[in-house]
Amino acid sequence: MTILGIESSCDETAAAVYDGRRILSNVIASQAVHQKFGGIVPELASRAHHKTISGTTEQALTEAGVDLDDIDAIAVTRGPGLMGSLLVGLSFAKGLSLANQKPLIGVNHIDAHMYANFIDYPPRYPFVCLTVSGGHTRLVHVTEPFRQKIMGITRDDAAGEAFDKIGKILGLPYPGGPEIDKRAQKGNQSFQNFPKSMMKKGYEFSFSGLKTNLLYYAQEKGEAFVQEHLDDICASVSHAITEVLIVKLDRAIRETGVETAMLAGGVSANTMLREKAARMAEKTRVDLLIPRMEYCTDNAAMIAITGHMMVESGVLEGGEEPGENEVTGLGIKPFARIE
Ligand code: KG4
Ligand code: ZN
Image 1 (tube, protein in one colour):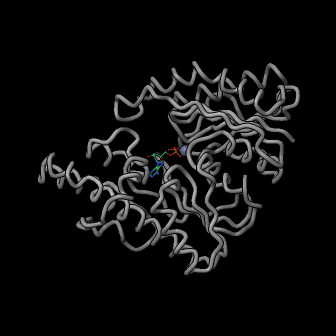
Image 2: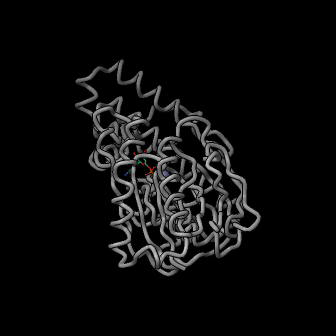
């Protein structure tokens, strides 16, 4: 079965084709328009999606060497994400589906980040997965496809959001995550005065204290000091964020007894997180899966493969209800065969 995947939940307009065995194309149009605002402006994101979605999809089909007749179903992100952005992708996919008589599959974006691991690795269960992106921090225990127990989420900022907000405080360009990562590699972790509350027992995450702590620190020390010690501050911040992520992932592995652990989402591109995860996997003797870089950040390949898995595993039958912050108002069931 060949699936066209479409993603528009945040600031990447993306389309990809998956033929059930491999990704035939994976096109991503990133929106540069937000850079000068130091964060995503939702209205501008929707407009940019609107401009590029048709061309991006066409390009994905061309690069895959297929046309719409070869597509068996269209998988589209139904949430969570920015409502206006989601609506662009969903309306486009729905139009395509109606006009071409193709079934439509609504995909959960966070599940898709996680299942991006199965683009390059054969599926295996059970596993625990830590999904860390700009909008989400979620630790889950998955026993079979789409059967998952959420062990912990963030109480406030997501891990990527913490990186980005701290990047802004430090005067780094948006998004702060990759910038902090780059600088962290040149710095020493010499600032360790971070809130202990981050390391609390259990599986919930909290990153807003770290951000506030850093804001006060930067204000107290002044601009010149911060710029002079930027690499060291970045290394320290990266350490603080990645340490808590790894401690909780490690705990989840030990408690569930799984033999496979995964990272997913944009922050799993982080160098320090990858290194720490590799060390942890060696200690706990689990197989560690991390998606290839292009499948870590937002993309449509992950939407296409997840749509394919939804059909294969039968979760579409009966229709699962859309969750919180997912689009419900378009009359789209998770899988609607358009007659
Ligand atoms: O998964 P993603 O593309 O979008 C969401 O679903 O949110 O994740 C984007 C997030 C941003 O917060 C970005 O700063 C972060 O991933 N990110 C990183 C790195 N690359 C991307 N954070 C830390 N280190 C990186 N190398
Ligand atoms: Zn994402």
